[in-house]
Amino acid sequence: MSTITRNRYADSVSGKLKPVLVILLIVAALAVVFLATRGGSTAKPADNNAKAYAGPFELAAADVAMVEQRSLSRSLPLSGSLTPLVQATVKSRVSGDVLEMLVREGQVVNKGEVLARIDIRNLGAQFDSQRASLDKARADLALAKTNRDTSAAMLKEKFISQNAFDSAQSGYDAAAASVKVAEAQARLAQIGLDDAVVRAPISGIVSQRMAQPGEKVSPDSPLLAIVDLGQLELEVPAPASEIPLVAIGQTGSFKVGGYGERVFTAKVERINPSTDAGTRSIKLYLSVDNADGALRGGMFAQGELVLDQSAPSPTVPTSAIRSDSGVSYVLAVEQDKLVRHTVTLGLKTDDNSFVEIRDGVSIGSQVLAAKIDALHDGSTVVFAKASAPPATAPAVAN
Image (cartoon, rainbow, N blue to C red):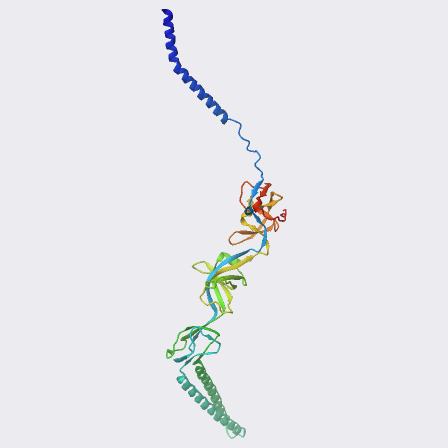
């Protein structure tokens, strides 16, 4: 009976140990996984100094650019209105009624041509009066001369005193002065008659008619406006910071709406000595030759003034320029490798798309224009067969 009792007790103990063994097995398995994972994380780190991939890298034709010869310039935008350089407002110099206006707006007139006539009846009467006064003064002068000559002869024979002769001489002098006054007044009356006929002071085109026949005008009343379109002036504002680069004689170009792609030229004639109080800009005055009369006063012009221009020199796209510690360089393609060349930069285009290379590479060289970080000095490159650029001369070493 004792034996049977022991077996039952053993079975009871073994039944209680089975769950514990399962748990221990699971914990052991987790420990193995943890150790394996920890061992992987503590593996030897990768060598950061391992040699990077050196190529070959395949380039498309768009990834490189040719060093080309061209002239670059720096320009100042221009915008302003055109005004005739020579223009005149014709005014009346006398008072009276306008009898005739012989021209209208848009009509071409020549210098000295009759434009209008003003009633001269009053002026004519004044002129006749002054002519009569002049005739009387001349007659008085002739009589005074006779009296003086007679008195001189009588004084010589001592028939009269010196005082009597002096009186005759004084009368002659006064008559001579009266003649001069009368002549001056007659000339003024003649000028009035001449001014009643209004003539063109310049050759040009009538731009405005400000009086009509029958109107009463007075001295300085405006009658007509005449403009000469042969020479126009373009007045434009410029930033004060750009003025040091502006010089008399510089040329610019501009376009005017309605003339398509036609380009007109202008030349700097004057520079205002002071800035505008409101905008702090400085006015530039450019002359425009308009011999064919195509342009009109008041038209709006837009263009640019060339401030600085380089001689034909090597240029590359700005994207080809790289910088290292403030030093500019390019990567030239030479014998399937990229070679670094330090370059000296010059002018840039207004849109910053091209830059002048003053030294470092030669015309015809191929340089890397695409920004590809993996490419550097010494990288091996090949061109895709379908887009390989033509062979060029090697770059000039520094």
